[in-house]
Length: 179
Ligand SMILES: O=P(O)(O)OC[C@H]1O[C@H](OP(=O)(O)OP(=O)(O)O)[C@H](O)[C@@H]1O
Image (cartoon, protein in one colour):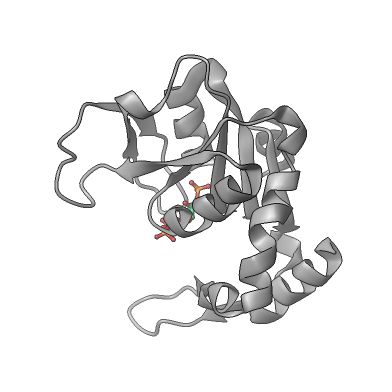
């Protein structure tokens, strides 16, 4: 089952050259969401990595996480909480909990925040994202969640093995699987 999903993910992924002045390739993940079989399979496949840990809620960072997190939450039969990036939009009106995200793959320090009232002290939280590059988002959310953090499920994990292990990141693909 997951072998077919992994094949589809590999085939639907592209590196794009944005052209000057950029001198690097950017990931084009849009083909993943365009493929109905991938969209159907991602939620259960990522949920299965942590199903035995009985998560009570899924938390994902904006913006791609807002697409993927609810698919996983639905498969687990739990709800979803948005983690916002500070400064990316108008300030959230409700009381928030914020945590610093260490310098990520862009080299930027950010802050991620969730609405305080949406997480209970005894929640068991699964973090879901499409990609872990340095593990910065996962680390920031673990700081925010404390003992409530179960781990992070992603499509692609490019982190060093020690980071993957430390942050309990589980993935369908690694960087080496990509074209
Ligand atoms: O492991 P890290 O170094 O934290 O990198 C992973 C993050 O990078 C991507 O986000 P991006 O900033 O590209 O935003 P997006 O959600 O809009 O794609 C991805 O969606 C993760 O959130």
